[in-house]
Image 1: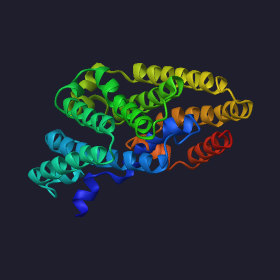
Image 2: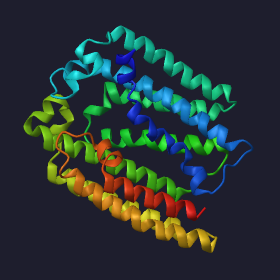
Image 3: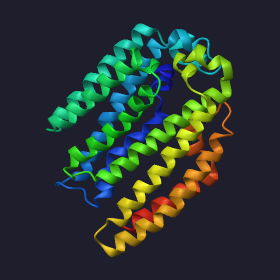
Image 4: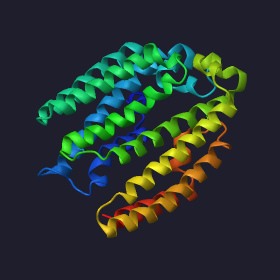
Length: 284
């Protein structure tokens, strides 16, 4: 059981809260019981992401055994048999899609199925194609945000959706940079696509994505029709920008630490994130 829980990566589950992006940006839960629908969509994506992690670890087990950190993963180390991981992944994938149908949301089920299909395509083929693999990882975050919009019936703001997409793209690039910095020339042995990247190129791309993300956020904030919302959302750009700068600095010092830890465990980072959340919420 411990091996299954570890492979399910519960520390990654908070990313599924992105389903609330559209309702938050629109300051509305849309339909009656919109909160329940949003929570249901988030739960469905938790199940879908568990399926992806289980299957992905089976596919990557060979390379993971050669990695200084990933070799301790449950499948790579043999604590969770590959056949068991595949079976559990199949069950959770079916549960995720069926949950969307059970909610009476066929479009939500279709988005979850698209996420599962793209994730499998990524694991088998596309993760070996430079740049494209970054886009496909990012697409998972976009599908989460779109699912929240579909589940609650709140039309997504194009600028806010772009902000979420670029933020996810920035984090994905940072993960590649951290991996390349930590493993150096050995990085390509663990992830073949890394031979096409350079540390300087990834660093520039991360900063460009961050700059465009902040610009998109400011445009979204300035477009709010209500003066109170507009003012507070513009103010919320300050802690957001500070968090982006902090994240950039932490990325350069990450070493072998997972990038997710930089976001969730650095005290200054968490403080800036709370500052953004408070000012953002004030605007609602």
